[in-house]
View (cartoon, rainbow, N blue to C red):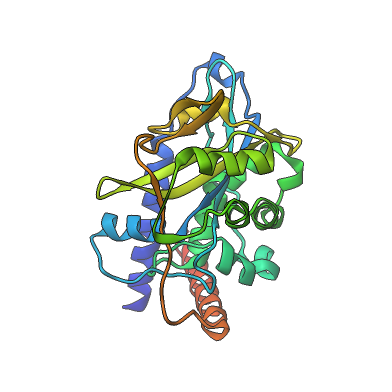
Length: 296
C-alpha cells in the first residue's frame, strides 16, 4: 500500500512538471535569436506567502515558518531576455538534469531556513528539485558561476545575505508591523538608495489592501546589478509609475499605502525539528528515486 501511494505521488509530480512544461510559449526563430541576458533574483515575504497559500488551498492549516519568520526568503533565481522580445525565462531547459540532494547536502540546513516553501505538506527536497528543474537548469546554461546545483543554491543564499531586503528596508525605518502603513515610493526609495538600481515591487491584494509580497532585483550575466526596467513588462500586472522624476515598477495599487505584515507566534521551530525534517525528506526523496528507477 505504501509503495502504491508513493508511485501515485511520483505520477502526480511527473504530471505537474509535464503540464507546466507543456504550457511554455513556443518562440519563433527570430525570438530565439535573443538568448537570456538577464538574471532575476526574487525574494518573498513569508507572511504574505502564507496567506496566499491558505487562500489558494482554502485551508486553515498553519504554514511552515522558519526560525526567523520575519525575514525575507529566497524565492528563485531565473533567467530573462531583454530586447525586441523581452520575456521571463526560458524555463525547464534540461529536464534530464535531475536534482541530486547530495550535491547540496552541505547547505541543506541553510536552505531549510532561507529558501523554503511555506506549504506544510510539501517536502523540502521536492521544492528544491522543482526550483532546480524549472529555473536552475536554465541559469546554469548562461552563467558559469552558477553552473552546478551547489553553485546555484549557494548563490541564492549569498545574494540573500548581500542584498537582504530585511536589512535594506529596516535601515530606512520600514519594519514588519500589522498596523503600520508605508508608501510604495518609500519602499522603492529605500531599495534604490541602497542598491542604486530599480527593483520590481509586488503586492498581494488582501481585503482591498496592498500587502508586500515579493521583491525582485536584476543582474546581467557578469552578475552586476542592473535596473529591472527592461523586463518589468513581463511581470503580470506590473505598471510603471513616475514620482518626482523617479520611476517605479510595481503591481501595487499606487493610490493606497502598503502593509508589511508581521509574523506573530509563540513558538519557533527548533533546530531538532529542522534536522529531523531534513532527514525525513531526504529518505522519502531517495525512496521515490528508487521507485522511479524500478519502474523504468
